[in-house]
Image (cartoon, rainbow, N blue to C red; front, side, top):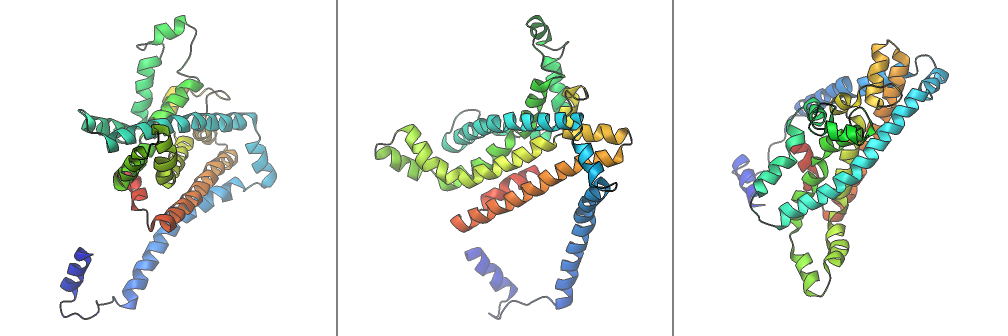
Length: 301
């Protein structure tokens, strides 16, 4: 508040009301923002659905009901379904360690959490090929035990989990730091066990940030392309997720089916945005604003 008062005094030293920009300036800025949003956001989204329905609803439904499309849908949901709980466990453990303890290597842990943000997803996929491929470090052992990770569902799940690993942790860390440990210490002083403290004190304070991180991680998991492309092998009907299947259809000049399947991903993205907005609104109403929810997007940008 002191900084705001200082700024107001600097802008209006005489104590008069701050100067308002002319109406034409405000409308020009608003119009420019709306126009660019329509050009780069609304128009492409509308084009996806327009091309998807170009030959009618029957052709659209036929493209989605193809066996390969269903296989891609199921594999996408499978990868996201496994990556979500794994990210949840890692995010809770890592954020708790960073926010509640001081230990040697804390800065290193924060750096390691950010690695999936900083390296290309394609490189991430190549790392798993180096580890679990036929010529990789564990390749011979996996072959001897008849286990297959690369060019199979386990590799896709691992790659998806890796690229989404920082999302939940990076949302929870600032939330835990901002809430502090006073309530947790009070609960322990009153005789609560560690689990009781976690379920009745810590988790309720984290619920909106946790839900926000899960939504973001899930959206990224379903739309991941680079890392999954490397480890999948592009086996049609077996290891293609929705993004990979869209690429195959587009490369085969099957434009209507490609945009039909792409519309599913677009719809999932729109639903994610709606749910994200609801979560932010509810968090804002409950806590009088939730600036911590913006930390992930700022970090990822």
